Picture 1: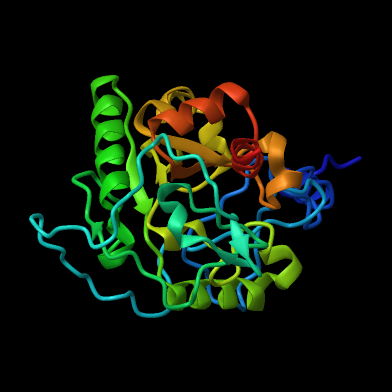
Picture 2: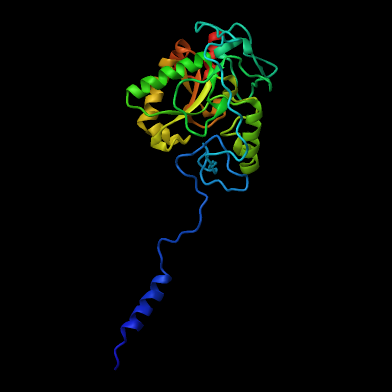
Length: 295
């Protein structure tokens, strides 16, 4: 009986292995554990690969650069006086937080903006300045600007972080109404309105338009806006120390039902040192804190 040649044995083994590749798996729409939400959307036709705050819904995978033109950079002289004076930190709201869904601008750094309360479409603070901190390259022009008091606060926070060996950069600060329209419409076109509402504010409802909010991130997560920041030393430092410089981590995991937004360890909102310290100690949503101040 003739023994099989080496060539015949190799062919038989190859045919067997081709049909039994254990690494081949069908595509899945299961969500990733850590959502990534950046400011600039991908083109609407691109399919998202990650999920939002809900464990059973797909989250947006967002490109680093927007497909439309950036707003032109603007410079604010360092010696220019603010047109709007910020109220003292001991301010206790005595007026309504809103009137017919419009934010009360008289509340200064305690102004409340959320999914129910909006800013006028033409609102832009007159004391916007560019803080002396590091930003990612994609943040340009107005998107590097904050109100004067908040800018001073973020400079202190970033300096303290650097001293503690914490690497942080700003990714986005002020956003005009028109820029919000561009972002939100692109998200809706890609993911649908219901899904987009979980991670993006409708135009006029973004805290970024107040000039009191800034997104920050670190090299440890590729300067992305991801919930994974929470597990890094940078994210933990922010959670423990932001209040010392007047900021709160606005959208907490425990308050998703109240705020209507997914957990965002990167989104900092300036309200002043005294109030930020109180909010952290009380461990309540900003809305609830303001209501308690007024009672």
